[in-house]
Image 1 (tube, helix red, strand yellow):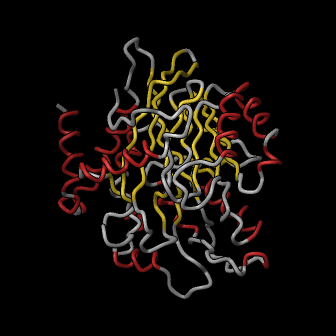
Image 2: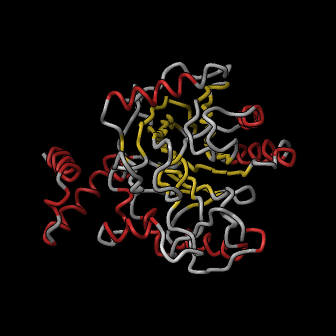
Image 3: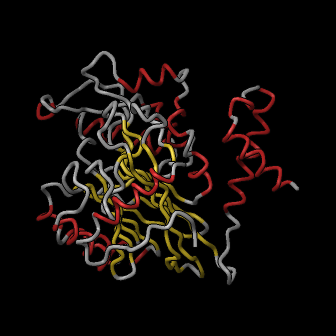
Length: 365
């Protein structure tokens, strides 16, 4: 009966959040969330082994440009009554129900207005107040890749400051030198991330060596790449080569971002390579020309400390809850036409990939 009540209440929370706004309902909501989190630990395979669910998204960019007095993100935050968690209202339940959510955090957490000399002419510089880190920790986002072309927007000291704020909030981070490790259901998941743009020659040997070392110690290794060309819907030859090198070295999942556009998925030697997950929560543009994207989820069978793949699904989304502008609230599509458009885009742009997946399931098999 308790599980039934939980499910009904969760559904009500999603459909009628304002109905639970009264203070006396806060404890009830907390109990429901705790119940959902507890239930996710009980997903078992047919032989009794655990199922580990991992969620990955594309670019997560919040805040604005410190060179400007106002920015579109702060304007929307004000319109949302100052609730910093407004961005995740339509995805929070997904992230709470999985075991690990990994996003590409593209920006900085700082109050500093310092701008390095080599960045002053950049079109975009991103920073958000340090307290905005709660947007991750409050919404079931446990890990971030921290290797992209905006992490140094305010210099090395701010980059290190951002790392501290993430750690203080309990968020695991990774880059090309720092292995992020998160434990779920007794399994330690290792994460590495790399900025590949103009750096491939320095990474051809480093990346496989790093991955092989991580795989020797951890049963599950996820590698994130920031690569490719902006606005491209398919990977370059360098991306394909690097992605497959990562798999050959021992990566169990490869995810990519930077193009701000969704790219197709390959299954190479039994491992999925998501070349670009596009945008997710993206405050860099009030109305991107393509607001469609998708969230990738994968399940692993866990038995005796060994992880084996159990399939994936995607969640087609618009990066906004509005059709006419970007309000930074990623929202799953409920229209068949919009979902079909995402699927057809992925299939069409995968035709030249040797190992492109043929189907993009929307539900778990």
